[in-house]
Image (cartoon, rainbow, N blue to C red):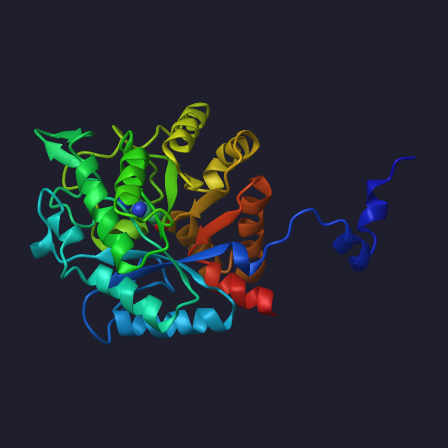
Amino acid sequence: MRRPRRNRRTVAIRDMVQEHRLSVEQLVYPLFLVDGKGIKEEVSSLPGNHRHSIDEAMKTMAECLELGLKRFILFPAIPEKLKDQKATHSYAAENFYLKAAQEFKERFPKCTLISDVAMDPYSSDGHDGLVKDGEILNDETLPILAKMSLAQAQAGFDILGPSDMMDGRVGAIRSALDQAGYTNIGIMSYTAKYASSFYGPFRDALDSAPKAGDKKTYQMNPANRREALLEAELDTLEGADFLMVKPAIHYLDVICDIKSQSQLPVAAYHVSGECAMLIAACERGWLDYQKAMPETLLSIHRAGADVIISYFAKDMAMLLKG
Ligand code: PBG
């Protein structure tokens, strides 16, 4: 008789036949940054995560590096008075986010820094693209994203992360980088980014919610699966180095599809709301964090993600270290 249980009989056998394993190398830790000194404010809807000033972020990064966690994705919280319709502060020399990248690379040369390329943290409209008469303009947004990208490349980011979902932005960014000689700077494209309700805590952290309307004319419809493959094809042709699916746990099918159709590394963004709901259940004693958290990340990896961006990365790194 066929008995699959034979391979589950002992820990040693189970470990031998284990198909997927998480390692710290796959994990990317998101950090929220704010200008100033000595600031470490907890994001109330995402306990355990903070808006850090550069000095405080360095303390957190040093702890992460001790755990072997060396990859970070950085997001800036920009004061309202520096926002405008064209997100000009995103590429201004005095933008503290650019200074942060430079200082982090100097202090921690071995870390990998991933940026966020999108207008929303800097836009007075709170949208990822240029707004005119309530419409999000696509082609007019591309040069702004290209300028932002060049400033980030110059600041020392290793990989740029366009999260805006404008059509053609990967190509526009790639050619701007290449023309400026930044041929070695990679692009981790938010390929299939859905108009999800799970971004709430992130928007609280950065105060970046749209002032009017929603993001449904550029982010994907949560009901669509095949459309993600079209986005993947375009991003690949335009020169992306990584294809990202976002959110992660509600879109495991999309991760799986892209993994099976593409030769590029697949990243998954386990977003703020997905983490927050697990944290909340664990706080109530309804779930066991030490078990539910790694199971969640493992599921994302099993679906096909090579790279996992998660607010749990540091805790997971700790768990892996034992
Ligand atoms: C925006 C951006 C968002 C996230 C990453 N980049 C939010 C949005 O599109 O409104 C969300 C990440 C998260 O929820 O953890 N450019």
